[in-house]
Amino acid sequence: MVLADTLELLHILFVFLLLGALGMITYSSVMVARTEEVEKFGIYLSIGNTGGMISGIALVFVGIFGFLSAWEIGWRLTEGWLIAAYASTIVALIVPSVTFKPWGEKATKLMEQAYKEGRVLPEQKEILTGTKYRATEAFMYGLLVFIAYVMVFKPFKPAPSTPGLPKLVVQSKLVTDRFEPFDHFAVVRDAFLESRLGLFVLG
Image 1 (cartoon, rainbow, N blue to C red):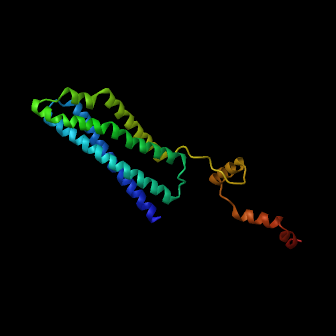
Image 2 (cartoon, rainbow, N blue to C red; image 1 turned 90 degrees about the vertical axis):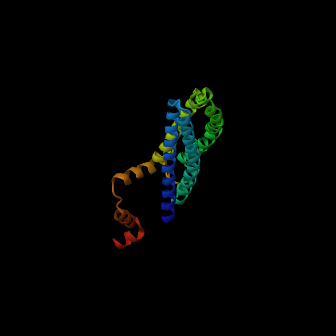
Image 3 (cartoon, rainbow, N blue to C red; image 1 turned 45 degrees about the horizontal axis):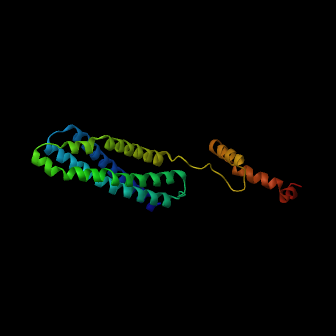
């Protein structure tokens, strides 16, 4: 279990790195919308771009070490909650690469003109605070909350079943085992009494 613990620790460390990067992105998003000073705007834009790069790298390693942890611990990799986590992580990697990344690059290219004019350009504000940006931002935050929910609560798990036994019997035994101690001696005793050897010994 040492390897599993190590993988899980690395998974958690990259989760914290991802949260830190998201903090940078959020701070940048708020301040870019508020400031009208071109120098500060450039700084906040750089913070957001850096946070986006770090969050992308962190999310990749969160997915890798999460997958390896689940495999090493012994989870079935076809569990519903794991499949939901895989799909959500892939979406969380693809969406920013086709939205936030090109938008940030476009706003950065306009900085040269913004410095020359000594003001934040309306095009930059529109790119980084417009409806498309805010809608995509809200979608991404919702997606990350969903991933956290899936990883913590592990929904979409199939009902437990045992081959060869009716589902009702399996569920009944699970409930019995949960609330009452299993009496192994009684099972052995009953089996002995019902056997031919038991009948012979007891006359």
